[in-house]
Image (cartoon, rainbow, N blue to C red; front, side):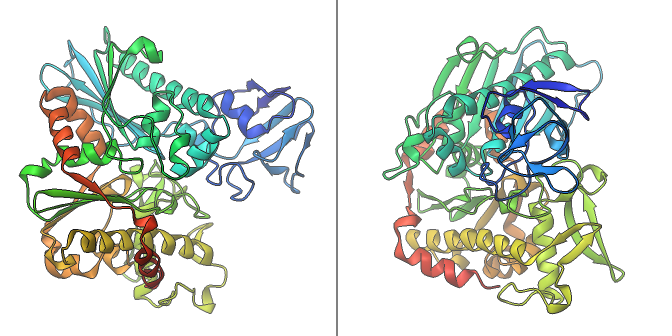
Length: 494
């Protein structure tokens, strides 16, 4: 069957018999967000039926239905409701002075569960020339790492690889065209262990069940042609364990953690909630399932850190105010805006210590227009913040270090560009001790994973530093620790 998209220049893709529309669109390069993994639970993959017949679900009075449930019976004409399906959002774009053209170019790539971020680098000077970020098209299979692993366990590794491979190729070709490059010599890739497996077309299913066994953790090298990418050489950065990946190694190495402040804590806030503590010459790492709420998923009005996302919420002269990424029209709220909103609601008594909304806000706390936070959104935030807080407390305990003994805190990840440290403490994401004792030593670092991949392009010693970090690392399995559930329950409260 043919699927025509009326508001995308009449683009057409094909659907196999019995194939859900969500999958058919993804195969044609039209990717809708599906945080629930296509289980028909989140309602975020809605499209409007303009013509044709579907089975599996019934459109509402406006013709809207969930693409993950709708199965084309005839040719269809639909209208997309999700702008991110067709708009690749540029974030943090910078350019070199006019006239500067690299003679030798490399690209650093951070493959995040939610976002892909790439940086073009002049290999002769080490100068970063351009940065480009887009939402990860694999979100059609779900918002978090486990949803991707589950999809792989159902035989979808090839489809997951095809999505990330197509996007990576598009990013590289974009740089080639924009900068009129003769070619790209090197691509260095950082990411969590699952994302690195999928980038390399390697089945990550072994990480879906005990003993959570990855196929590889070491550095992987490819020729560009082996992965059908327009680059000469590809390097995948090494990981520590199944859920403490190359992104955390890259971040630690970019901080030169082994030569830095003792008792330093790195928190990479994403769906995994990876963190590492450097104490007495050792590195203690863990991963805690924070879920995707802090990256915009599982929140009714949530969105990733893209153009138009509300990233700050505050009172100004008594009026509720906000800012958006890039200054665009508000399209939803991302993680850092969610933290600000929760902190404000706590200060003003709009939610209590259990997270329940005051009765006066029965329809939710409105930020602007239809962008509002519901009771279930607050609960999703509580689950995420409790996982992060519990991970911090238990990591310190396992390392034998009191929380007020931490000498420096580095906050990385998608939130790391915009997070307000005081609001993060008020909203229960970070321990109170961090503000009381070391407020001036909390550094908001942005994407350290990408920064490390960039360093790898120009610093011959970087991979050696990564290996030394791995050799000094001990992974703490919080999931098997009975104390974790006690901490988690306690930290649900504000």
